[in-house]
Image (cartoon, rainbow, N blue to C red; front, top):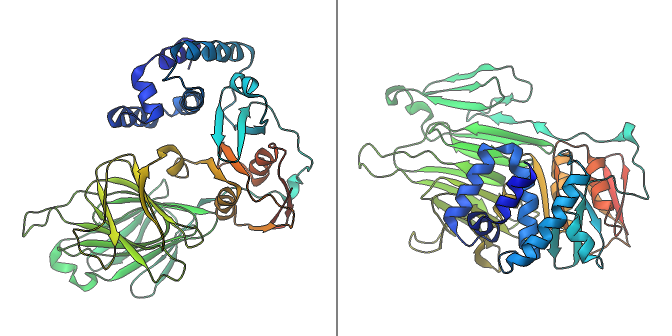
Length: 413
């Protein structure tokens, strides 16, 4: 994206509305643009952060000043799309503006720079840990287990009423036969498990597409019945729900996602899908479950509650729920689905960020006695990098240090 296009974006009201989330239609338009033009994604993310932190929507004169600084930087230095690094400097706000992206968080001010950060610890590359990839284990209702990770593309399962194929690009696809011969597996549950350092995409028997993150389990019928479609999620999944009609009633066939919001799995919630695209993060080691809606509408309620209760979400909203809270708020869509797009987007405290790292690289995080407790991070880096690249990025804050000891990450100040 050249400087002329950047200048146009910073003067475009639709783009400013997208950055500040003031108009749902503009948000949807630009998210679709990013999806259709992935090469623009990184520049758009940078400009969005600049808009948010410099108050462009409030001051066009200030916007032009900041843009002039941005143009000078663009003319001096080529951009690298391999990674974006975080650098800590709480006092140099002006310098941070000149470095393209500002991210203000509750506990610090960080900005991104396109050079290798200086770190007190040099990671041993021979002991580095590679990123995760497509990994999954499928368990059928009869107990048969299939290692999908190493299975060759083609037909994997041929059971009465359904078949399961692995596509050439590594997806798992269910194919349901005519109703007359699928009663044997009607409602019988299959389970797909994604281990640490894994991810996977599955097409359910009804055509619903689900992306599953590391350390996630999805339980679903091999053949859905005609009354309701219901699945159970533990971990994180992004759903694109297929629209289906009950052939008897002519009404929309409900799609329900059940998940737990406490570690003991004693408090369950359900999502009744009225739309299509949404993300659910319900890991047991997270303080709260988060359901984020991109398109359509969903209703979130306690599993035992009646259908009229709960919260009805609109696009670009999310509900945060635990034993003690149930809050609807505006969503950070980019951060919520970054994992699906192959990225880490950190706009959170260090503990939350390192839980993501632990799941993707299959490591244990060990906090030393002097480890910082109130450090917040802001930044982006691809999940395709080795763990050393991610940890070095975090170390560039100057407020935290890591040591890689086998599959343990030791955290200190």
